[in-house]
Image (tube, rainbow, N blue to C red):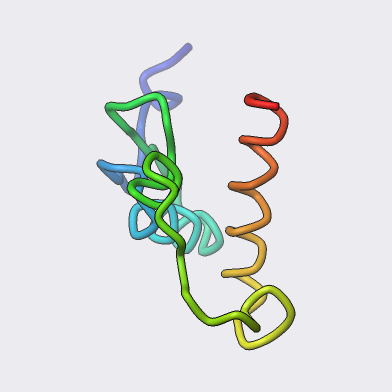
Length: 84
């Protein structure tokens, strides 16, 4: 591994929803991103305490961006696979 391999453009500290969104947005723009989280869980309160991300009953079918839908689906997928 060289010194250049260790460089990053963006460091995001905290993998709550805001941190994840920031890391994804930076990566989409071509930045080399490091996302860190002190706990074993990602998603912050949303996933660690089962706090619902949004209360609207229709959010499962429409009314969100493709990015937000992918984030919700991705987080659910991680926990379905790791914690059946």
